[in-house]
Length: 296
Ligand SMILES: Nc1ncnc2c1ncn2[C@@H]1O[C@H](COP(=O)(O)OP(=O)(O)OP(=O)(O)O)[C@@H](O)[C@H]1O
Image 1 (cartoon, rainbow, N blue to C red):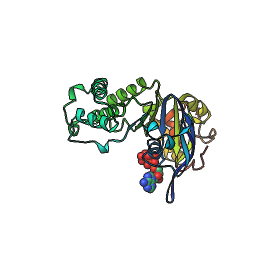
Image 2: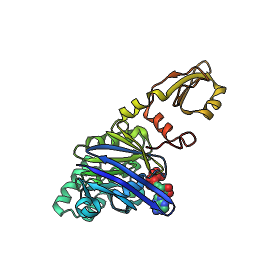
Image 3: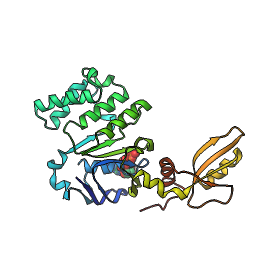
Image 4: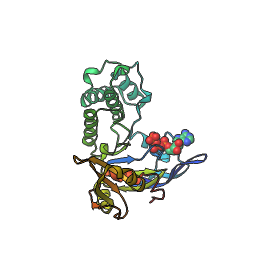
């Protein structure tokens, strides 16, 4: 199974929301990372058929999805962000409603709904109204509806937003567990959500793909850019002005241990090579002031 994007572009009047996006996705979890306005929703909306690309194409196993139409969209599961929940529906009513929308037969729907309520630990809340659900329960019911049709392609738009660390880990692990025989696109702002489960991470910046690779390769490629020094606290402001500061730890002796990302080893303090993390790579790639020209 493969989704290919060929020079996919979306323009809204003067805004280029997605620009010549090219990539190929096969089975596994893909983290879609980028700050607000990077084009993540635009990409997900094109795949799910909610909006049309201005130019370029999205192919499923080599065939254009707009030509495949229903044949493609029946293979798709989509978990939107939380705003559109039906607050007066119970969990079960909501899943029945969504199953009807997806055209599931009655018997098939009944079995699937029971299975998914169980799988997502929602069985005891089947008759509770969604308006009374916690944030984590709402995320779980939205994941459940996205799985009703056994999708081969699953699109998750910030599935862990607003969750506490326990719920976050639980949803993250669940997504990893179900990722076999599926292409999962997991859009998020939070690096830690995907660094351990993503086969590859796609970094989007201002509508452009700036990096797509496995977490390990991304980190390896940044080894020569991570630096550390220990300085008196008063030096921090100066360092911030000149470099992308990725971490600061206060030490007992009053000094600060400062991590930065820089293309070269700075000469102003005693810097030693440090280990980059995916979060430091994110900060480096999306630093507005210093990296305006990072592009593929
Ligand atoms: N319907 C629209 N009309 C005009 N501009 C739009 C529309 N939808 C998105 N945009 C613009 O397209 C760009 C990409 O937006 P998009 O929503 O895809 O980004 P995003 O990465 O999903 O952001 P966020 O993380 O905030 O959800 C932004 O500049 C946005 O303002």
